[in-house]
Length: 272
Image (cartoon, rainbow, N blue to C red; front, side, top):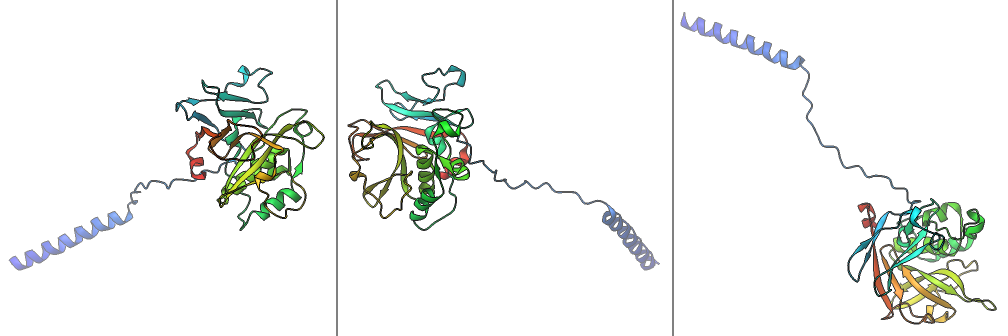
């Protein structure tokens, strides 16, 4: 009798267990929270980088003046100096009617990877048309384009050519900088100009980014005494010429690394 009772109870247990499992199977599954992977944001490299400049001498930071605070003397750009009058930042107007530090125009645009610099030089020679700012931007005397803007618009003046070439070379792993100053063409007085300085294997090369004739070799900077540099910059640093403007050397004690550009967006730090 006891054995039969035990069997009945066991069968009853199995019956109840099957009902319980069946109910669970028909219920909705509980969704387990999984953190979403971090998405990589797309950045418009046609827009200059927002950021601040650091005075390397005293490690203090400065921001760009508000547009309404600028007067006619600096609406086309201005420099920021420390107490000893050593400039550590330069500011120039963009195509967006907003001022940016000059480093901001080198925002990491590389049109495509190449094995040597001759491809980049040929592109600027054959594809990029020289055009003054006055003609392209409603008689404005000074407008700077980012490297991507120059590449997409296929025109620009001297600093636009130099910015595209320098940014491209930096992206390929070269030590290239935009140099700004004046150049004296035979029979005329010195005029404002921008070009590229390339450092490679202990040599300094001057690359005239606006050159539209065929490139046969990389010209040494020492062969160009008619170029008078004032300052140079890459994506994050700025160097000022504190010596003679007649120099053909782009390194040494007369070149002071006076300023550093720090973008607000941490994405751009990966491009340095």
